[in-house]
Amino acid sequence: MSKGIENPAQKTLVLGGTGKTGSRIVQRLTERGWQVRIGSRSATPAFDWMDESTWGPVLRGVDAVYITFQPDLAVPGAVASIQSFVEMAVETGVQKLVLLSGRGEPEAEACEQIVIHSGVDWTILRASWFNQNFSESYLLEPILAGYVTLPVGHVGEPFIDVDDIAEVAVAALTENGHTGQLYELTGPRLLTFEEAVGEIARTIGRSIQYEPISMSAYAAMLKEYGIPEAFVALLTYLFTEVLDGRNASLADGVERALGRKPTDFAEYVRKTAITGVWNQ
Image (cartoon, rainbow, N blue to C red):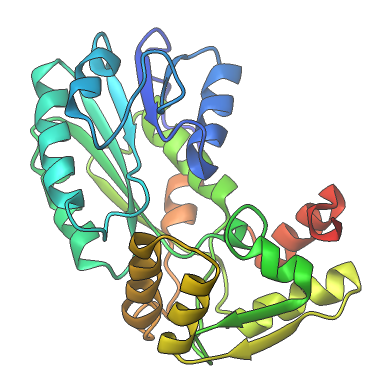
């Protein structure tokens, strides 16, 4: 839904510009002829959330920033980092902030408030669990192995497609009319993780077993595989707190921002299956 195009000559910093949402945003902005600076440790100049000395150089000359925090706004120290970064961004002349937030996370909502009260234009993208976690993240390997075990049972989640998030972010960065909006981004229906895995299995014609286990058993399994303690702690938080049923509802953020329905999980599975990523 076009709401009037802003100035394409402005420079936009995309933090996490090589990640799931960031890379898609960079591609879309570049295709539209917008000036883009990628914020990542591998970019020049480099950006590192853990090193404040890298923030100033990437913010220089930037008009708008897409903020995504790695690995998640729920990790210890994230709120303080967002506070410091937003203050620096405003001081250097940034006029617009678009924050990727998470549904049902008190820490994420604290970060939202920092952006909302920054004194510059803002848009909040409060997203549910990503579809692409099944194909571009930690759930890919279990799917390839044909055995997915997670500490979550019959809790519905309105999985959101990362391409939808990217489109909303680009709209917020390039169009008038999105300032001061909090878009809660979900897919169009609730699915349990078992149902989601089942849809993938049926589409690719393979048997994939799903088994719910306790959180303690899952954490122990991750540690056996050498997963870093900090990531184990994050997943423990997400699976025990965020997936406790508090997010088992649909929201209209995609439709409000784009004027269309969000992508259904089945459509994501169909498109992803064609790439062959689940057949390696």
